[in-house]
Image 1 (cartoon, rainbow, N blue to C red):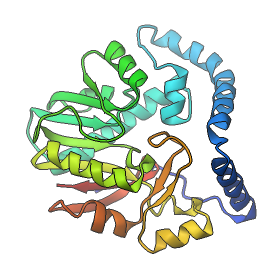
Image 2 (cartoon, one colour):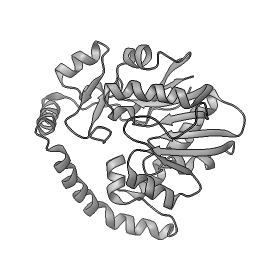
Image 3 (cartoon, rainbow, N blue to C red):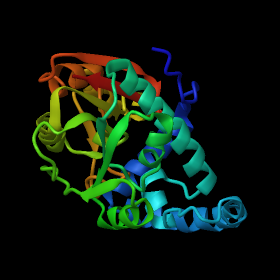
Image 4 (cartoon, rainbow, N blue to C red):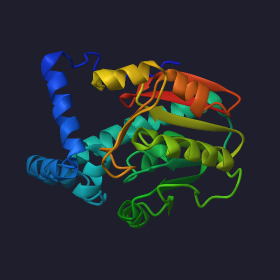
Length: 278
């Protein structure tokens, strides 16, 4: 479909890379990752803040998310990256949507919208949108979105369903890097909920850690992945960026999305594999 590949084609490898993954695995088992993330955030703020101050001079009226929310969602605090990738990814999302849908008055929801990086740019990418809805389980994120992007309807969800939306109320629901941070139980609870809120023939778009990411797995994890199972890395708060899930094609196509009548794997985008289902 010509989405284009947005990733580095060279996978890290070798003994040093495996050693790094083992160190991270040890830190996860010892419950040290949250502390390391806080240290990383402080370092990134020190590096990024001067550039951000210069950048906002060109757009002084635009509101940007707090550094803590940006880092939690994107692992960076760059206003420029927030803008550029938001515009790029909104255009890509609409390109995918328009391959499967037509007409105006679309009701579109971003499940796990974070600090509105993509959703705030969707209307500019396509005039045929009647309503935009963003949901997220982080209350601080939703509070910021409601205050800073008031033209979009934002609602808070919990880690587990339901969404505060009526049955069959959405033409499209998309989520970028959401299932990549959920347990197996939550995968199936949320896909059931997504089917509830989509209209008959409604479109689901989701990004997953597929073959483009499996080089990150340790040998025992890789074996599980190749057996078609879901691989999760926990010992941290589920739903957070450092809780990670990896999805083989058989798991997504034959298990997670089995309830849909149409399922298609797309090109790699957002550094992840895109799946569409209706």
